[in-house]
Length: 318
Image (tube, rainbow, N blue to C red; front, top):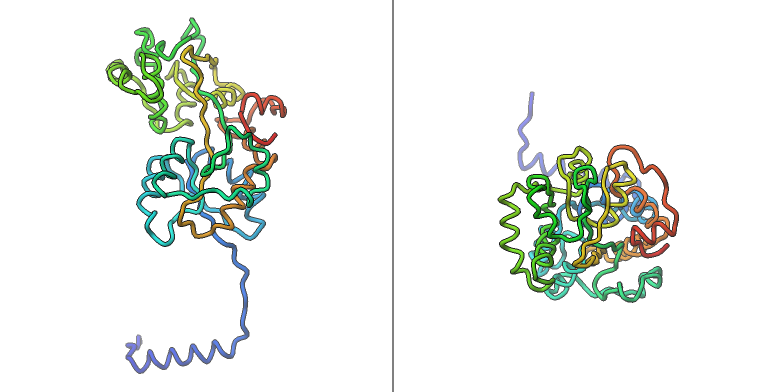
């Protein structure tokens, strides 16, 4: 029979619980402090887990958890939460442009480099007062030499009629696509107008839009996509993974891409955030990240040397 709990019974239960608590010896549980890292997810997040959080940060009494999304919703979250006493992220992965935007809007804080011993290894021209860089690379054109028999020399080559329906762009790299179109047709990194009409033309020709870098890799592997704009480091990694591509540097110039980590202005676990920012600069983290980032299917066919990593992967501390 189920007894209905009255107010008197509930009061008695509370009293009994209090006595039991007093009688029981106190137990102190060691708890890890959660550190929430907002990042892109996918194989990028796997690299962070395998080479930064698991071996270097978690053993110091922190529990790194990831909030995976593209940069745009992450910036929206930072802006929406900036007036709150505490936000939902302790570390935010951002591009150089994204971090500048967030800093100007008071969503991320100035970095205290005295709390990052390994920051001395960062080249001065890459160091920022609001973004601790993780890696950098340059923007290039990837193409399948069996389908694109004449090596491309310009971003404008993606508009050639013979490639209609075989050009790929990545949804989360919308800014890259817009900038490249502008550069190809008379614009600049600060003047996107000349690229607008051309992007509409590319849409009408049947451009293939992929949601992630990983999806683009699969499309290049299967031959669904013949040519795309991508980062040099990804191109090297995908070549090593057996994807049939070549790399071409566009005549418009190879724009530098820089990504790193910032601390939200209202981060809950600032100590853990600085532990993460310093750990990602460890040589073991950077080399491990370079070896595993990007391949689909089997692992890379060879392990790059330190010189190869520095030249092709654009890492900071090797």
